[in-house]
Length: 599
Ligand SMILES: CC[C@@](C)(O)[C@@H](O)C(=O)O
Image (cartoon, rainbow, N blue to C red):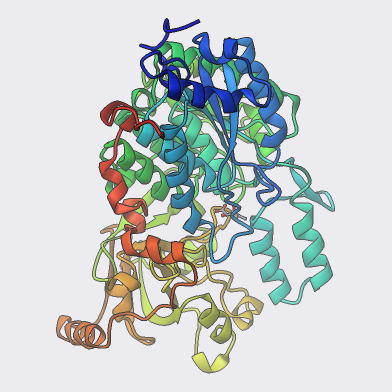
């Protein structure tokens, strides 16, 4: 039972190494103790990890506990051995101060697991916002064969015959609560109705975005991202995913073969067409950097801005996850883009070994209200704009959620189209915002630009979803539903706010936002891609000097060891918020050999 597959399977370096019988025995015996046999571990069957992101603490991904059973069945059916292991939980709606803080922690620990244990391939269970990038970043760094499995969105939410979508219903109903149109009980009922089953956000929030983009990148089986969590097809694709990873190990099809620059270009285009979250550039830039693929926010504007919005899902549109699935999901979007020759790289290889174009060219769009054609889009140019200026080096704006009201009020000056300027109200964190926003003495009116700072990767810490700031109650009552918002934090993908966000460098890294004072004027010009403080360079220089002398922009002290460690080495949102030292570790399964024996 020895030796035949040592050259091809890394697991056999643990379980069948005649050069070091002592270690082989030690590695083997503990994996036998719950019933695995020597035959299973030593006969050259691929050993497949299942990176389990579901738990009671992670309700969005919890259904993976069930789905993993079907993944196991698929792995065994294809001749592999499944070994399931837990991933550090990341629940966007549960973790304080923000789940984004934990993306890099889950990444780091998964790298250690994938590299340091006898695994030949891995199924990455993805779902809630940060679990997807954390898993893909780890797979990118280690570069053993890997396939992602989405847990799927919740069923559609309903309240009195209306679709209620995750997150989006919170932001909309909060406004109605502020306007006195509903009471607290109805507000709670509305929000609870949006979460009717297992799964993640049923809107095109960050979760559906990132799961769609994992498919767009080629890391999931075609058609798998949009299947709602409770549907039977979800269990079936779990089984197929388990089968496929065993073949991928045999073919040695690795993340670096799939997630190429071409695949990222496809993903950017698909992100515009689906109306994807403003968190997508952060995470895709991060994954790309861990692969050594060049990608930045200029690419997002260049490749993505002119792509039309096709998917009619909240927050940019009206439908929800089940509708997206029934219309055809990602493959139908890809097919529509290909028909109009808008998909840049149809030949990019996907997890099933075929090109994305090949996978999608013959699928049907089953509901053109939900997935529009390029000839009849929801919006013509729906991608991100990457703004620069004295406020920051980079901040993005999601143009697909600019409402007619916002366009009319801020972007329709015939003498200065696509530009606005005004005085700012500066908030240092969400507590400051909540404390001051409704106070009439602050003098906030239709002309005010709201600024959120201290909310980035260092300042918050972690980069919190707090830039979509609601106007004061008294303005909402007068029918003003959105003021321009600018900030160095993030916002929920379920928010319909056209905020200018992910500003890098953040105030805590002494970006231009740190120098702003309430009452300063700021000018934003979308056509020129600029955002500037209308204060003289001399004055800004003097403010910078004074702030530096005072020790820099002040932010709250660390509360945990990880907060301190991450703050000391985290990059800015535009650069993917990655841990700076980690990017030099690439393809370590190939570049670093095996780790040393442990005894
Ligand atoms: C409720 C919405 C969340 C938590 O998913 C959000 O993080 C998002 O970006 O979509």
